[in-house]
Structure formats: C-alpha cells, structure tokens
Length: 89
Image (cartoon, rainbow, N blue to C red; front, side, top):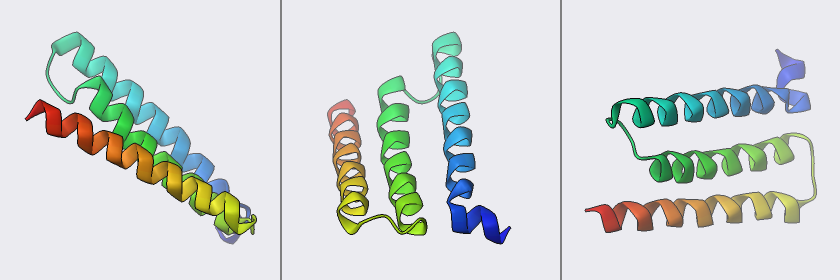
C-alpha cells in the first residue's frame, strides 16, 4: 500500500474509477432522462480530477508550478460548474 501512495498510482486508480463513474452517470441520464445533466457531471468530475492530478503531482515531488496549475484548473472547472448550476435554477 505504501508504494501505491509513494508512486502516485493510487491517484491513477481513482481517476479510472471517476471516468467509469462519469460514463455510468451520463449513460443513465441519456437513457432515462433522470439523474444529473451531462454538463453538470462533467464539470464536477473535471474539477475533482484536477484536484487528484494536483495530488498526484505533489505525491511524486513535481515542481510547485505544476501543482499550482492543477489547483488552478480545478478552480476554473469548479467555477464553470457553479455557473452552469446557477443558470439552471
């Protein structure tokens, strides 16, 4: 387990699970019309994925500007998510 965290591979596993989650949520919405809208799923999961990428960079001792870029991208995706949800209400 230590090597999963030290290498950042744990984040890779979580990112794969997030992609599977996105596919399942989008497929469910398209088939049934119920559930979360596709743009909300994507903007929310992209924000989370950017946070995970920043975590992976930090775990693998990447230079701080790359970690900051991941966090900045997460912020932009989060703001896009908020904006799209705000318009829908």
